[in-house]
Image (tube, rainbow, N blue to C red; front, side, top):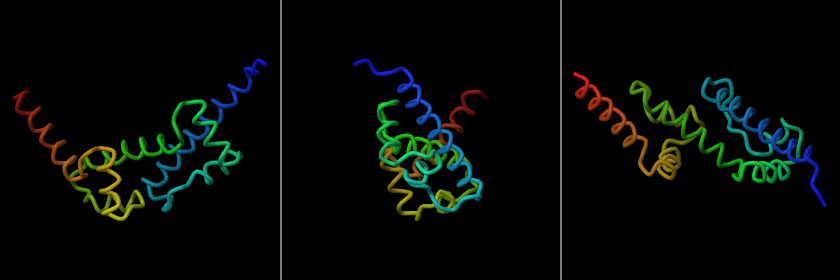
Length: 134
């Protein structure tokens, strides 16, 4: 039996809706308009699908779980925020709804270094670039 093309189109529509809602939610978190992280069931409710269906559909359409995209985007945001030396790491953790020690564990798991180490390396690399261009 051939699978109808509209099935695949719907899969990609659901995945796109999830990614759009994820970006919107994380923007709300960073800006302070939201103070609690959504779970998969919250995104599923926004998209009007069952949480299991959402997870299975995203995995089928992209090859990755919804958490993969959530964690990837959260790491991008974390790294961007760490590039601002005037914001303490504990404040970044709070903004992203983490306890500081849990934020460090989360960050180290994905970046293989602590937020402090990332920040220090980032600013060292900037200093080295300035030395090269001078």
